Length: 200
Image (cartoon, rainbow, N blue to C red; front, side):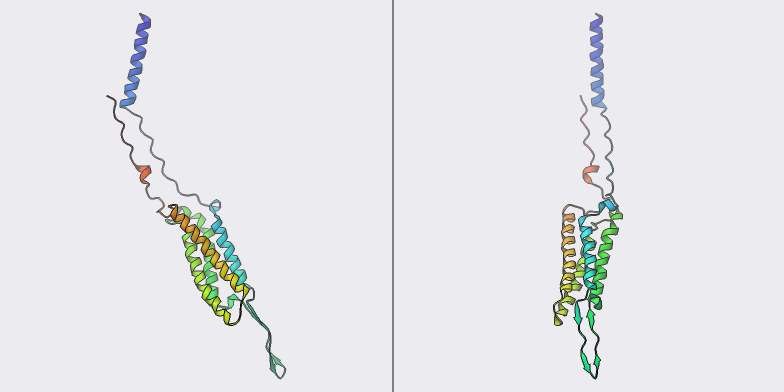
């Protein structure tokens, strides 16, 4: 008799627990608030290094002599001095160099504010590299009246590589969805779960 009463009491307790669990389900834990992207030196990417390297090489190619002019005899013992011309003798190329340096500064410096930008940070160096190339190519073409310059060609290639690499990175970032506003609510995370049907 005692065994039957104990078994009956155990069954009633289990039924009560099952009914309570069905009627009063546990409150779902709130969804974790999405965090901001990491910032700092660890977020530097290969694209940032490429832009920085292109800017440094651009300045080096601008500084080396593009053309060398030998001195000429003017008569009566007078002679013109030998001279050299480099990229910094052109105001347009100097502006292009400044623009590419700004792109490199942004690529490295923006790693500390990447979490607060409403757009992929690579878009800025992409636009600056495009401006640099647009300033460099026409000015380099005008030097053909004097002759061909290998340093000038390398300068154009530095600007072109920076633009090509940043454009590729920008397309990848936009395709991956990095272009949406930072901090915008995610519908998938804030959607309310369907209430479970109460057990009858």
